[in-house]
Amino acid sequence: MTKGPLLRDIILDILMEILEKNQYSHLVLSQALNKYQYLDKADRSFIKRIVDGTVEYRLQIDHILDAYSKVKVEKMKPVIRTILRMSVYQILYLDRVPDSAACNEAVKLAEKRGFRGLKGFVNGLLRTIVRNKDNLDFSNDSIRYSMPQWLLDQWNVSYGPEKTARICESFLAERPLMVRCNQNRASKEEILASLKAQGVKAEENGLAEGVLSLSNVDYPEALEAFLKGWIQIQDVSSSLAGDAAGIREQDVILDVCGAPGGKSIHAADLLKGTGLVVVRDISESKVRLIEENILRSGFSNLRAEVQDALIFDPEWEEKADVVIADLPCSGLGIIGRKPDIKYNMTPKQLEDLALLQREILSVVWRYVKPGGTLVYSTCTIDKKENEENRSWFLREFPFEPVDIRSRFGTQLGEESLKEGYIQLLPGIHPCDGFFIAVMKRKTAAVTG
Image 1 (cartoon, rainbow, N blue to C red):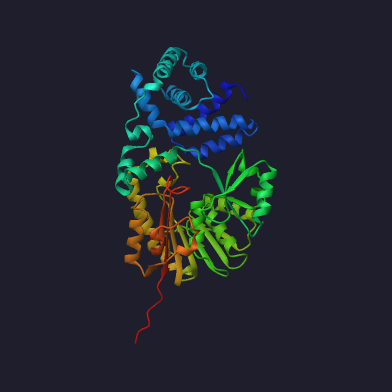
Image 2: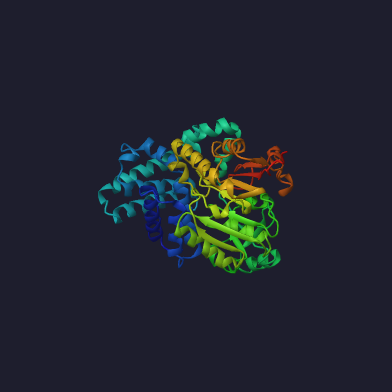
C-alpha cells in the first residue's frame, strides 16, 4: 500500500473541492480516481472509502467536533476543518486505521499544509474524541443518520418513521455497482464469462431481467464487457423504467432529457435493431456524453440531439410511440450514491423542481401519438415531484393510467402498479429511490 501521507494528501484535496468549493462529490472523486489509476486497488479503495464516508457523515462529524472543540466548525480554517472531518471519520468508522495513526497523520497533514501552529489543537481535539468515542450521543435521528432534519420531517409525514429509518440506514450502507446487459449485443452467458475472467463477481439483481450487481471491481470502464458495449452502468431502478414502457419492435421513441443515455440505450436494446430512438438533452456537453455511450454500445437505431425540453418542437408533434420523460429532479433517491445532495437541497429547490417538471410535461406530452405512451420518471422520493405531479398531469392532459403489473418480475407487487406507477424506496426495495409512472394518450372519441 502507498504511504499514508500521500494518500491523505489526495483525500484532503478531493474533500476540499467537495466540502469547501461545493463541487459534485461523484464527479470530483471519479476524476481523481481516473488521475490516480496507477495506484493499486487497495489504495484507490481507501481513498474512495474515506471521501465517501466523510461526505456521508459530515453532519454527524460536525456535531461531534462542535461538542468537543472551543472553536466551532464554521469558524475553523477550511484546511483544518477538512483534516479534522476526514480524521474523525477514520476514528469512528475505519477499524483498519488505528486511532493513534489517524491522529498522527492529521497532525502531519496540518503541518505540511502550513498550519504548524495548529498542530496542538488538531492533536488535542482528535485525542479527546478518541477517549470519548464510546460515549457519543446519537439519540437524535438527524445526527444518527447524518440527515438534515427537514428531510426527516418530510419523509416521516410521507412514509412514517419506520420506513424513514430504513431509507436513511440504506443510504449509509455500501451500494453495489449495478450494470444492465445489452442482450442484443452479447448473451448473458458471454457477459458473465467475460466478467468472471477479469475477476469480477456478478450476481443477478432479481428485480429486472439482465441487471447485475458487481463486486470486486476496481475500474468499471476498463472491463471488456463495458468497452465492447455489452453492459451499461445503470441501477436496476432506472432499468425498470424501460421495462415499464412496454416498448415494441418498430416503435419510435423520444427521450427528452436523456443524458447520459442509459434509458435510451435500453430502449434501443428492447427494439432489437428495429425502430428508432432519439435522445435529447439541453447542452452540447451532455449530448457528447450520450454520443460516447451510443458509440460504445454499437446500436445503429439510436441518435442524439441538442434540444431544450421546454421548447416545443413541431416536427415531433404526435410522432412518438413512446416518450421517455426522465426529468430533472432533486435526486433524493440516490443520496446513497451522491451524498452531497442531502446537504445542498432545500425546500425551495424542491418546489422549483416540481414546477419545472410540470413545465416540461406541458410541452412534451404533445409528442405522444394518440394511443402512445408517456413514461414519467425521477430519481427522487419526494411526493411533490412524483405522485402529486402524476395526479396533476392526469387531470390536465388527455392521458390515462396504464396497468403495468405484467411488466415487472414477481418481486414487485405494489397495488399502485395497477394504476400505472410505483415509488421505489431504498431500504424497502433493493435499489435506489426511483419513481415511474406510465400513462397512455387517449385516442379521440368518435362523435356524431
